[in-house]
Image 1 (cartoon, rainbow, N blue to C red):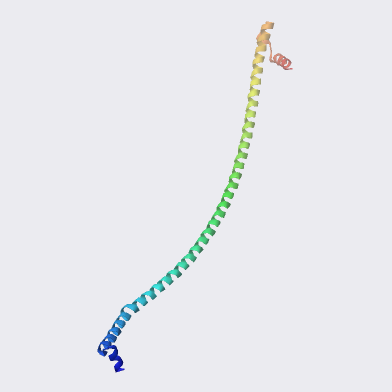
Image 2: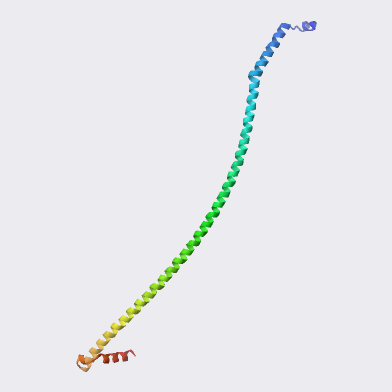
Length: 165
């Protein structure tokens, strides 16, 4: 082996120092660079895995919230439709009631107006009869040249009855 080492020109002192240098550098790199780097990569993978799991959980929850929102909106729309229908029915009923009251008031006012017209008509007829009686009395007085106090009411009434027939 000695001859082999001499043939290749290997100095055992230099080889030993290079092996020691390599071992020291390898140890330093392993402990100061490789292990922290592996640890950092491992932690990074763990964080990425946790982040992905959290993202999946957030997506699942978001889909649940969206589903819940849709259900809530659907229920709210159904409730609003029910309320709208109820309000519409009440409004129609109230409108019918108001219309009925207006018709009743209209009938009452018409009856009242008819009564007032009848009263006014009767009053006008009575006033006309009085005036006719007065005019007839004046005509008789002038025609007969009789004393106006001699013409009595019975005569005037009989004349008025004849003229109305």
